[in-house]
Image (cartoon, rainbow, N blue to C red):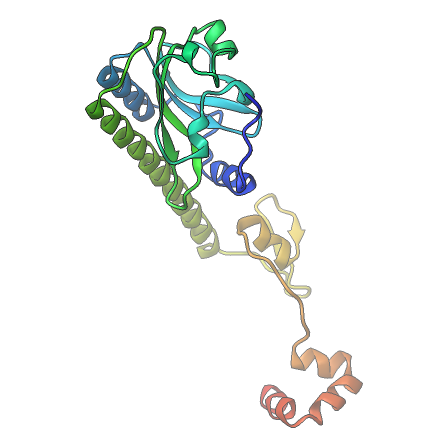
Amino acid sequence: MATLKLDQEAARLEALKQYRILDTPPEQTYDDFTLLASFICEVPIALISLIDAERQWFKSKVGLEVSETARDIAFCHAILTHETLIVSDALLDDRFVDNPLVINEPGIRFYAGAPLVTPEGHILGSLCVIDRKPRVLSDIQKTALEALARQVVIHLELSRVSTQLAEALDKIHLMEGLVPICSYCKGIRDDQGYWSSVEKFIKQHSDVEFTHGICDKCMQKYFPEVAEVLRGDSEYGDRFRQEI
């Protein structure tokens, strides 16, 4: 199978990055989801598969040892659609009959993958169940698998928001403390004892971007000729006199 291509692939990869989930250690919550999926669908293998740029990486896995595979052999056609993908027998499906994961280990014959869809509509991967023999999935099992997939995304969202709130609180606590400022140049001393500009200090602790201008007082002090011209403009002149 050729590498999957999406119209919004850059946005999807950026959304995946924002969750900071790739290459993180196993977590009991996610392992519980795959365990339940395996139990409900009565299969030996269940995975939370996330599709990165060149690989599919397993956040959680039951019945499988490897932690990732190449993306171009991934079964996750589900990331192309919001619908659950079900392959009853991979050897009878032209899309997968020559797939290395079918021919070799783990010898996939049955596959069902419910897409992991973010609130913005980005498909990160799938919660999938796998068997080494052909089978069918009942309507109840399919519904349960899709419900579990939604719960996986909810937990990803909660983790992302919690991380952002924690970082915001850290920034607030930083700003609540005493910030050493030079009495002359107004530079700021950072936690390592080095002096830097206000812009550099703020950028180190936030995502704020800066634009630069010249206030009226500095215009009068450093560029008196320009200030004189601007003062002649009625609208600017009124504001200028108020500032000065």
